[in-house]
Image 1 (cartoon, one colour):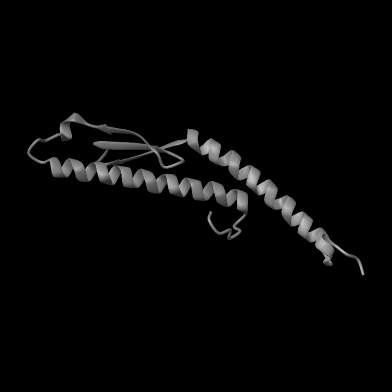
Image 2 (tube, helix red, strand yellow):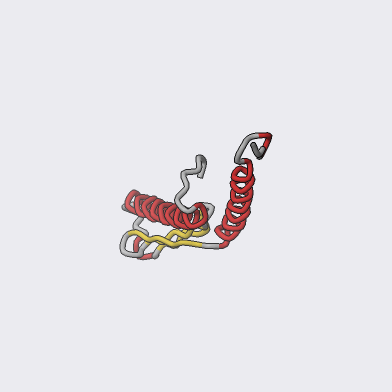
Length: 112
């Protein structure tokens, strides 16, 4: 009987799987580096507030149309900011998940 990886039959499959996992890991590292440089923008209030985040979900910028700054209604402006940032974060998540899915081919790998 042929012996494979660690003395177990079929070890060639284990070696192939390990090589594939190393390839996926390298691709994921490259993707994570690329995502740092990719930005997504989302807005609220019809574009009155715009938030930009990168692929690491780091807030890059917030732009506010001066016309929506009303000292009598600060709460509305706060809500618009929260909404724009939340949408930008969701968009970044969707982008990351889509790109990771291309690498993993739909594999269910815990922690990804």
